[in-house]
Amino acid sequence: MKLTKEVWAFIVFNNVMATIFSYTSIFVNLFIWGNGHNLEGVTVYNLISYIALFLSYMIGSRYLHTYSGKFVMTLSAVFTVATFVLLFYDNTQNQGLMIPGVATMSGMTSGLFWAGNNSALYFFLKPEDYTNYYSMNTMISQTVTILVPLLSSAIVYLVSYRYSFLFMLMLVVVAFVFARKLPDYAATEPLFRDFRIKTVFTKPGTKWLVPITLSSGTYAQFQNFFSMIYIFSISNNVVFVALMNVGFTIMMLFGLFIYKRTGWNDLYWLMIGIGLLLVSYSVAFTHQTFLVIFLLLLMKMGNLFFNVSNGKQTYRIQVQDEPVMRIKIGMWLEVPLVIARSSVLLIVLILFHYHLNPMVVLIPLSTIAIFAIPALQKKAVEKINSHVATEFTE
Image 1 (cartoon, rainbow, N blue to C red):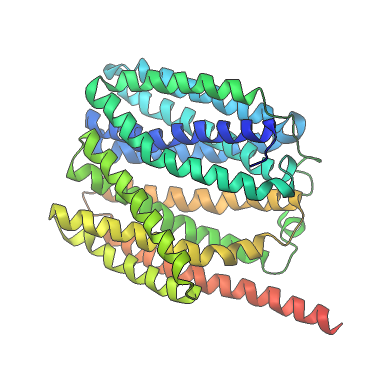
Image 2 (cartoon, helix red, strand yellow):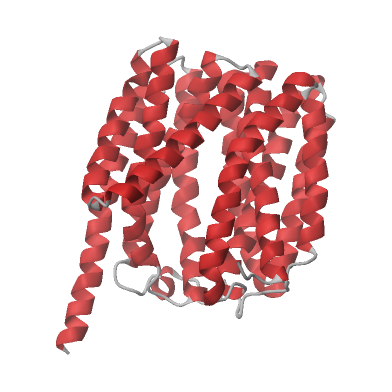
């Protein structure tokens, strides 16, 4: 597999950061949950983190032109250090400050990383590198999603959370080493120039991406957040939580294998995905541990089939424009995404405050979003097809 040293550095950096993100999404949330904050603390942490992600994504996008993608990626590693230093020196007497501080640093890490990472696909990687890059990166990332929960849980279980935070800091050193090997790729023009909606969403069907992203964000946030919460509610044992996440990954890989082997039409997979998701929502009405685990696994499988069948349509809508415009569209789509994510979490906080079950509101909301996504995509594709037909007749 022929890849340049710069591409290999990019792959290694990506997967070191993926390791850190995998750890953070599971064990930092579990750490907060286990410190007595439960649902409210975890919700506040995620809410602040997503807002910080949005702001830092915009800042990082600006720096892509004024500095470089290499600078943005390195800056994300700096905020990673800040995240785990705060966690390492956590003082139980200052828990009210710890959650916002860690959430802000963690969100800044993610936003800067994704701003630099997404731009690299257009300004750094060459078309002939795409196939080899994606195959190698996918293979490593799948290994990461299985090994990281197991290794991290072993460290936490055998020693303590503090030593796992220290281990993550050591990984950041590796990230810094490979960040230095990245090329100084940069945006060819300021990304906030001509950034109005009318000048960005010019291709047919692209304006439909806004409600599609709003629906997708609502549905995805509900799926990810509550699958995590239900795992924590069963047990906050780190080994159990790790094994559940590994089980999710294996289940999704198995589902992807089935999807590729059958060659069925995407419409069938969409219907199967929706069916599995709706069945899995009955998790809200049972307290039997084994049934909860089974329904959560169904939820992940349904999520995979639903996303795979829809992903091609969304890609077709986004891929019409030149690289700079695609990045600008992505920047705009961060707005409905953060609105959707924040809305779900705010609903959780408000209903939790009044001692009400958030699922009563969020299950119907997520169900509406599930059916809205393919309907909105159909509208966008119709616009594209209509435009193509008009050009052909002319």
